[in-house]
Length: 201
Image (cartoon, rainbow, N blue to C red; front, top):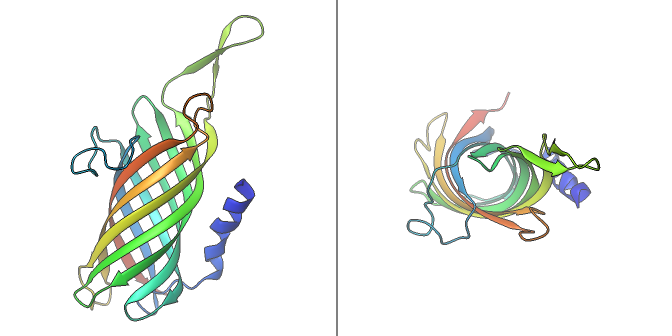
């Protein structure tokens, strides 16, 4: 499974990275994560308390027309859930985006990858000598899968350096979490981002 995920993460290296033509999209965003099923929280998407995170995304295109785009991205991120875990993400998504002349856009994507979960509390286990010793200091590497939906708007679409502001709702699953009683842990995250279209060198 991890080998397949690794291959998928490498795929974007062989794709073009232009949108608009001659520019490279780079997205930087912040998000709040919650270990809840979709539909929970305020209006079904806003969850409390706030568990902060940051994400950097590089996007590559598979196919692009005047109004739509098939793309793949690579995401590197970090989030902190107090008294639970620190999470480091590396995953890829395959998605589709529709953009209107007004500058508004809608997108959806499916993804898979890896999450390195580091406990935010000290954990102990009984050893062979009958004493408790600290375990899981460096966390565990686990799998993840996600689906997300988002809307966006070009702030300055016809400028030399266009910027797209985005709001995405992500549902993702961490596995295996605790095999005995929670093998798959559901999460939801609300992302606010800015995509910068940088000139190619």
